[in-house]
Length: 225
Length: 256
Picture 1 (cartoon, rainbow over the protein chains, first blue to last red):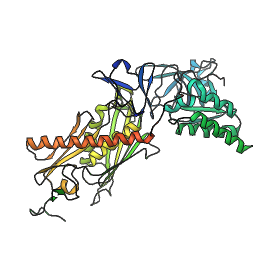
Picture 2 (cartoon, chains in turn orange, brown):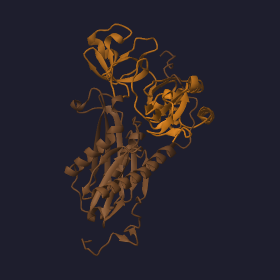
Picture 3 (spheres, rainbow over the protein chains, first blue to last red):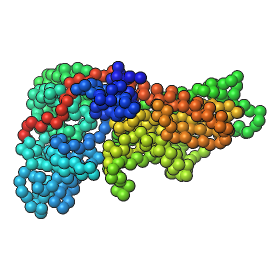
């Protein structure tokens, strides 16, 4: 019943006889490792793991995400982080000190922000912070949304895909762990960037994608000039 | 239509009225990801049953008081379209669909890892477009595939199928005629390793007949499981995992 020969697995497929090999997206029963998810099975650091093909973003501390302010309550902004759980950005987590009555001046409902997940407790209260040079309010560019499960593919091994995109597209691109993407550049470049990102989302599971995307970009740019 | 005439038989030359062997399922068709707005979805035909399942979530619970602090709740709504049966069905939930919703939810809940998503809800909606006996089993099969498609962590898929008794004989997957005029109907749902999560019985069976019906329904579930699995696997064909970022946290480099 070992289904590791095939790459795509469904929940309940047996992956290994060795419980020590249980990695992400798996569970152990009676000394055997089974898949928890519909996804792609692979070996990683002597473990088997399953990378899901779909699913929601679950915040974890240290993740950098793009949020949209949903509400302002007593000394907190409630931020939608494309997840079943909303984020809380406390007034003290801004890079500079501001007064409570000034809150809507800095971040209004609908503002996009780049924030980091500071803490997640067992009740899934998600605390966010903006207190870092790399974080802040997004005043320029555009924000797009893809499935959070496609984020690792969009970044690529060691950032290969995302660095290629940045270079070829002449855009500044940031990929949030929650599947929101921020691009900034001139309008034509941004159009192409968003188009490319959606192709990558759709074809994330296919081989030779980086090369095909490179070709696609070259062709698009030639057509433009 | 057809009365309870003693002369009428459910078998002709050892085959059933639709030409099936007693231990044969109706033809099955499954399509995954048919709804763009749902997180996971599945369209399924089991003979003349046509159902569609949509899964949303995990997402925030509304109304709030239903929320559970340590786990996700599962809501399952089974609904029959008013045009799904011969006589128009009065729309909306009724005694029967409330019951079917409850037992179907309890058939799926044991495999869902609800503890992974505290304070959230997984919503499953099953709409019956056309009914021909066995809509709850078709609904559970479709819902199970839709849950997998939504990326919900589960211990396994769930497969569901009924066995019945007509003319004193135990048959697999009864169709409408056999269900309406037969002597018993036993729908079950189970995991691929045989743990039963739904077991109902309508009608009368002896212990021996019940055992045989259960065994037959199990073999039906196993066949359905293979189809469910194949549909999910084939959707992506052969894929190769390559060039993905192993440590996705090291992303933000640029300043805004």
